[in-house]
Image 1 (cartoon, rainbow, N blue to C red):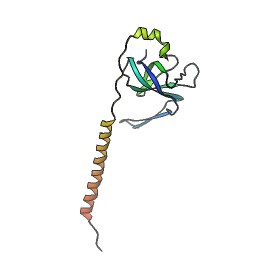
Image 2: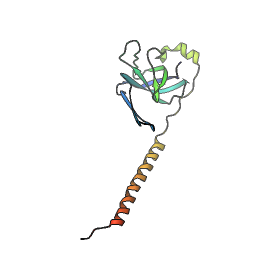
Image 3: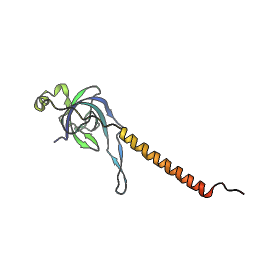
Image 4: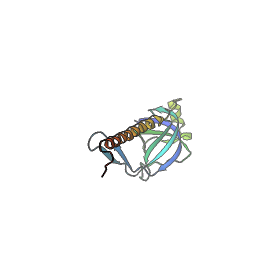
Length: 157
């Protein structure tokens, strides 16, 4: 039932600033605001993957304050995490088989060795793309200013 099953160490636990997410879209109304409710997120340094496309550093969104479905991760601990895809990341609850890695012997025996996570994509191509767009925008402004200067020049009285 899970989209991803992985093992990893919690780098950042139970952050509370995941209240809203803005997403841009090419269809009207172009800007979408999603309210994710009272959810927290934890960031994992993934060591082993058994299911899904999981990057080496990934985050998991989870309810914290709700009884029966809330789940709290502890920073520095290693867990086996069962998660569903959710807004570009993953989501989990207490209903899944999440557990400390040291207590997940039955699961580890059933899954076998697993595989390494996907390396996180570099932000360098995105930076190059943004700098190219900025350069073209500045060149357009400069060209417009130069064209106006040539047309109207300095007004003499």
